[in-house]
Image (cartoon, rainbow, N blue to C red):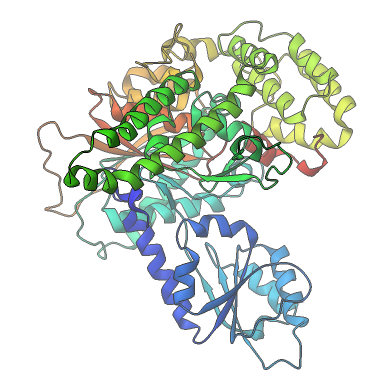
Length: 600
């Protein structure tokens, strides 16, 4: 089912299978027919682990979404609640149980907390008087979910907010546990590097857990050579910038959730000759996006300006393949052509879909508004006029553009200038509050706390030094045949990925000064391997590094790491893990208070 997870250097299907096995074991604990009541947020991540068919095999007959009031009627013996450990969800569950029809034959209730049980939640169920109604209270440890052959995510959307605004390190504990699970399946990772306070915490927790489990390690030859832990706040700039890869733009414009995107249906309608467009589909078109689709794997990480040429080249190849049928003369040749037909038809439909998606994106990227926004972003990144009020931002506020767009730009200016002059910052704040409403004062306060929007203190602006030393801006980035990671933002090389690149060669010692300018400590740890498990490296064999982004990662950064993996002379393959796949909009939204008040 998930063959694309095993294509890469590391077979991530092993992780998926381990998660499926645990799920089956839990379902078998509840003998008899079952209905699952889902916390809606979990349905997406679970879909990547187990399809409905697996649940059906284990007598799951009905599925409902968790909502207040009565449970829908279902003639089943067991009701299982799959929920995150959140207090507000416990109140809904209590309501569900209280409103059970007394005429019904009694049903067994079970609760499965994902990813951890919580004493607080159990206490709340006790206060509500329903704790005794549960036959089973269990936890399902789903930390790292495989999204693709080289990509894992915890889909923990509030991780950055919790760490930097609420000083809550729960997500770091989950990360450390997830990494321990990974090491149990793929062997101990001998070298750990990290940068940032959260990275230091995670490494400490991992080392402590390893000491506690000493002696119970399984003898597995290590698959990963190195683990690199990176705090998101070491590089606040990258997620604020507009991603310019194909996958990055799909996410920026339409949002990719759990490997799926919903698109406006108009471009996908099959119009018949001579028919008007009277009955166009109303439902959004839902596409699955992963490397199982050959064409998508080929174009996802390209700069959008190189996608058109790749699609037309593919179209020529496909039409040439279909033309072959005229040359098939013998029965054997015809048979061979027919056997290839399903694959060719799938390729043709994939091409049609991506041509439509590319047209949708092109309509936006060729607009004046997109170009103006990009120009200002690139001026900030190159250090042009970052210390005064920007007229473009003023105009956008005056036109009441979406608030998140304004917050992304102002934050970007602040990050590229190491904070804004108090006078400039106060001006922006006043304009935003007067235009969008005073309730957003909480959001501005959050952005300040997270370091995205801050007043300039006495210290000098280090950004120009960091930019020059790490070559974060490359003039004339080659978008068609890239030779550097800066192609993913058409000129800007993501700081997080430059740090990863320098670590591989020549090593962080060469950039000690820059590392000191960035927030948080940098460190290196070694984990002892049991004897006999030291890898004998073959001549020319690549090393494998797991890069873990604490606080979220963008698709453009993922594309840049894939580019480094494919470089002939890099000698390194990268697997990417993160607390959440995100873009600038979802990230800023997670830091807003009451984002539902947001001006559309």
